[in-house]
Image 1 (spheres, rainbow, N blue to C red):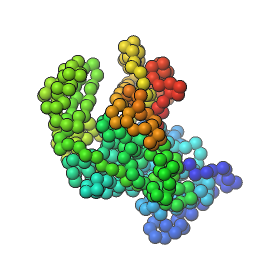
Image 2: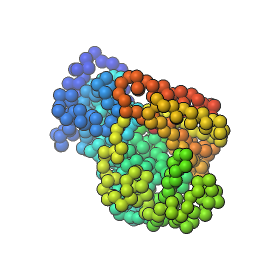
Image 3: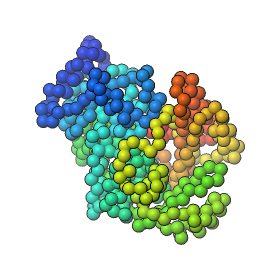
Image 4: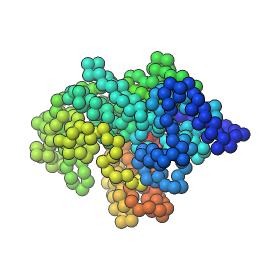
Length: 422
């Protein structure tokens, strides 16, 4: 988020709120096109606020609420909002419409407003140039849709969940199934548009290489409000191969090639999986996106544009770790004992293998240092349905206990984490 300086004011929060709204309504940008905003008095306020809240832990009556939600239609609206927030000492949180595990884009401990970029969501793909411009309120699914409807031989290495917002995903690094082949989403950002704390609009040339370096993995909207990203698209074969085999857990994989070349590799290097030819599915890259997102592979591509998640919203808590040395069998058994606790509703661990291209890119290339020497990343997750403080405390305490248990078996001095999970 962009933390506009706020050092206190003689005015009350209510006065700041009124002055801020008056400033917005009378700004030059409002004279050109109306700036839309929602206050708690507006009937649409609850639905606008809740639409992008994916973690129900933060969708409660006790969670701090913004005094205003601004939904800009243009860059000039963003400039006006930043200028007015600075002038009237009102804290600003930027929301890109994605998942936001810890609610940092819509919760604050002081009076604040949300700059919700959900209307700035267009994606323009240039197949000939192999590039795309994506507005910061867009989703990964919209990017995939625009690529998939125009070409079958270009792709982009981002995450598997279509409803993730590109703003937070790109600014935290952004990883997906093809990170061993292509690296991160942020490794392929070649330009950006950013509004700084003074309301000035920059591209890569005007912001300078230091700032351009920082926004690609250094945190979401920490250095300004990114309004759009330009990325390079990457070549993929006409067909790729996917498979899911179930043993004691689920093994999920994507191979950028045909089944006939994948099968002997699996049988040679991973015979314990017991993969047969009938387990392997050949399809286009865009259809593999549907596969991993949980849709039938013959679904219309338009489903990728939906901003409503395929799975229901739930309470959840997540943390992460990086692993540099192999875990012992005993350590893994300790993980299983904790996962099988009967009073924990839905625990999940996701192991993402590194190596390949990730080891070839220097750790100083962008502010994402998890490169050579990293074997894999673990995402620790727990979901629960039951409402109330007791259920929340029990599940949050569980994941913290698991995190403590893993300390001797993961990176240390310092212990590392992915910036999108805490």
